[in-house]
Length: 97
Length: 197
View: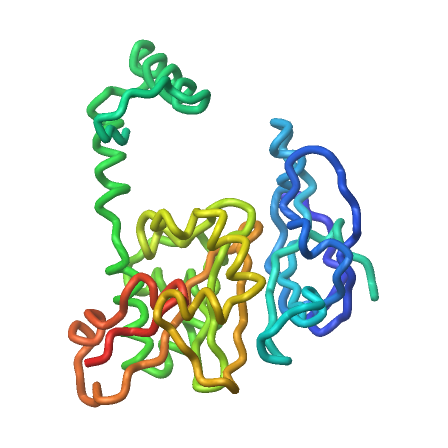
């Protein structure tokens, strides 16, 4: 399967793009615009935004697990300071931060 | 299909399912029997598979390392079919508690836990566990010590998750089968702890 090159490495800081395109998107609203750290590279997978349009989704897009601090995601977060939320994000939604 | 004795018109997607199924049967692609068998197989798959994996990890340290490094490959060792590289197992420790959600829909490790419970798919759980996990866990009767870090895992794309709970105290010397009986579905989603012996 043709795949795009992975641009980020574990430990790198990234920001999720704050974009609101129409269509089927697997980037949750609550995490758009947030910054976190690459937890791992999951591999490359067909782009779900293209699959939803009955296209092949190729080249496959690198997928990452990005770890965010909860207190940075939710300004009124009441849990522990180190609590995190890990979210799977495709590379085309990430930029260096 | 669920029929609780109430009469309501079919929804759009129900109608689409019925139409597609009837067409496939009419054209000889599938038989009604095959459809019924597939549904039965799906329903029969329960959390016992996940429990087996957890119990093995509790009794075999080297297996646990392999499981945490590559969940799919470690499940295959036990004869469980899991799509390659798609399963991530996260380990609970005295310092870290993990909980799983799919905020976008209902992604769930069906190959290990069977069909997801209704609450897992509810808007209530999906929107709240990611924002106030401690409050949601408490509603399941799970109250963690104050210093424990909570990690929520949102399965938004191609990965599936299973929590490896902590082995309960007082189970020293137990064999895998006996241990597996303590590993509940909810403890592998992360909203509960394994049953105490």
